[in-house]
Image 1: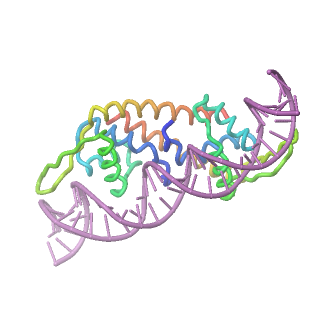
Image 2: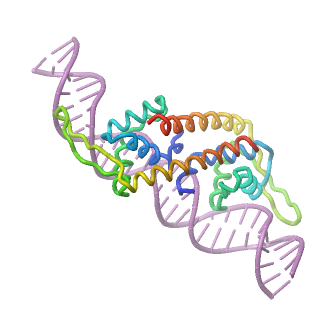
Image 3: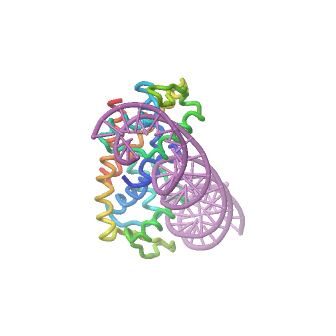
Length: 106
Length: 106
DNA sequence: TCTTGATACCTCGTATAACTAGGGGTAGGT
DNA sequence: ACCTACCCCTAGTTATACGAGGTATCAAGA
């Protein structure tokens, strides 16, 4: 995948994954990779700062748990996060459609 | 449109527009806006530097003409640009499909 | 004549965000 | 002991879209 391809779309993807059920950072990465058929394998230097950004924007909230001796930070959507997810889904739809239109018609 | 949405996809769009027929910068912007149903209206501070970038990467080539007293810089695809267009079309396809998969399955 | 709007080009600086490259540590299997 | 998978983090780099500003031509209208 080209370097900049993901830019501006990562938030949507993370919100969508968390929207399907709370989970911790590492697991979110795994679920995203799985759900995309391996196409979207985020390096940790992308994943964790993105989650922090979403939390600082109050779209996610997190709490620490410990499972099997390992600390996990579990994220869930806030109400604002649910709204943002819905909005970003729509925006993705129109963006993708616009791109397809260009690719089809020109 | 959100600020970062376009990032990494602009080259594809510009190559696609020029691939449909050589035209000058300003006109490329108009054709893109038209082909996208008004969704993609690029500011000039985005359009012109992007075209220059593509030319410096040898994906576009340009020549100056004058029509009605106005100077125009007309762009066309190079052979490398045609290849890049084909490649980026495929990459867009897999990216879009990956996103859709995530949005559908999670 | 003067102004406005569309056409047509440009550059500089800024902000954003994904990524690279490091760091830390736990648990289980060989 | 070592390796792999798990699990978290940050600092700095880099790419690129955009805002703001500049230049110039031409046609239409006040």
